[in-house]
Image 1 (cartoon, rainbow, N blue to C red):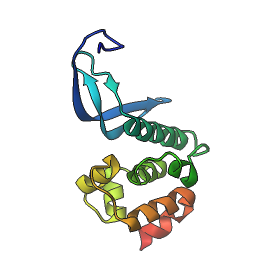
Image 2 (tube, one colour; image 1 turned 90 degrees about the horizontal axis):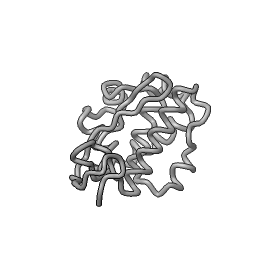
Image 3 (cartoon, rainbow, N blue to C red; image 1 turned 90 degrees about the vertical axis):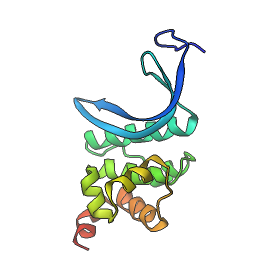
Length: 146
């Protein structure tokens, strides 16, 4: 199959960090798995990667727009995406860096990245905490004090 962007016919399966910019702000969506054109790097994403990436984009946009359009926990649950999306969405929604998330959740940065990418299933307690913080972000300061 030829690349829809550049016309080349070679793809490679890979997992890459994807840069995303919105209204002059940028972020990185970690470990986006798909097939990437070897010429122009445009990805073809399987459905689960596409949904996870789109959810991360929407969460980042909501954060930039004053958090007015953040997907609810119910909306995220209805996507069929792995529970790991909650770790990523919570971190982006709350505006946490990997260092801050690592400190807040009590896991090292590599583990947080593994949870966010779905390569490792996050503990149920962490998923519940992330769901709670997405629904009730005002609790972030209380969680930091624990």
